[in-house]
Image (tube, rainbow, N blue to C red; front, side):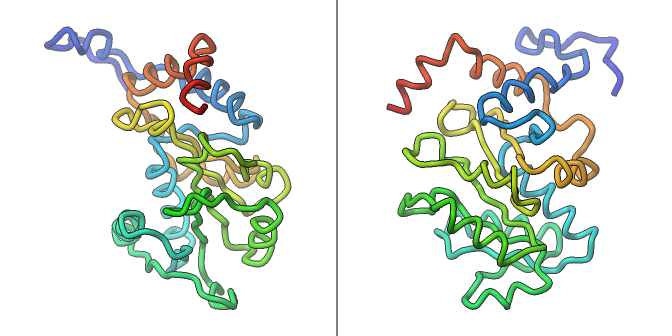
Length: 225
């Protein structure tokens, strides 16, 4: 991507003539925040963009369906819109999970919506093993204010587990669209080719870096409390 020879036409665009900065500092900071290695984390434009990356993978590899837990209507509509865009069928999973054969991924929310009940780590691991080799995609966009154990730990032992994070809710960056896709190094490496070279614009990167600065840690903890 080339820089522009012209400056922006308004003060709010100062500095935007240059290409977006490297995502590495933000990736390292987010990896530290979520307790994983940087090579396990991909910075995304929120959980929606991460879901798109996963659906691109499914489409290219010949999968036809995405399965979900029963979820609230707004969430269902959002997933349906993305599935439609990539020519995939969205289905609600039913027991027994043998019906998942041929599916590329199974999406769950942690905590479950709208009741707010967090998933148990053992139950989630059991589910990941049961649906393998399909991906278990765990959306933890709203998990950061939960008094429970994150399922990120599963990405260290289960190669088919992907956890999505977002800075929209707790950090007040819904308009900036910044999040993360976290998985095992091998799985993440395979997903990188489905992400565009420059996924985030400069204002979003700067907003995220500022929100995650150590100097704001006490303010963030106050929100959680």
